[in-house]
Image (cartoon, rainbow, N blue to C red; front, side, top):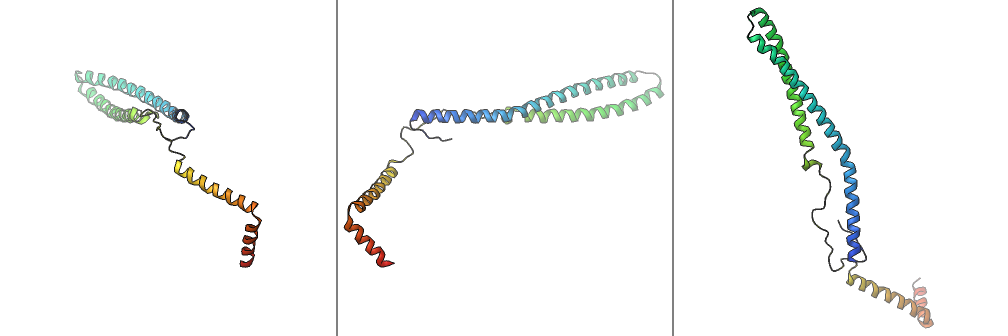
Length: 169
């Protein structure tokens, strides 16, 4: 970023103010997104815990069915519980993927606010206006003013210039 000022101190203050404004604007833009992502992550984590609890509730009857003596009951119950376990595994995978994606989006590398990388540097010599440009402009302005002054003061010169202009027309 570059700013202008009448002195080094003013230029530095102007740059600090501009950067602070930019940092505040970026923070206001970033905050709602981060808040929404954190809420989504909390919801996904909560759902994942519920699915894990359900998985444990499904695994307990499967383990009990292994020790059961009634083979018919054991077979039908195992099929039902296995089907439920597959469904549960699919949901678990979905929530795990969602949590990973949200963690990635909330990574500090993606959600950092604008920050100054280095301290503010103000050169010792002014970069604008250039002294050479100011000198040339001053010289040209001086010549225009001097020419106008001469035309106003010298009637003979005005008559010669007027006659020349009328002769061309």
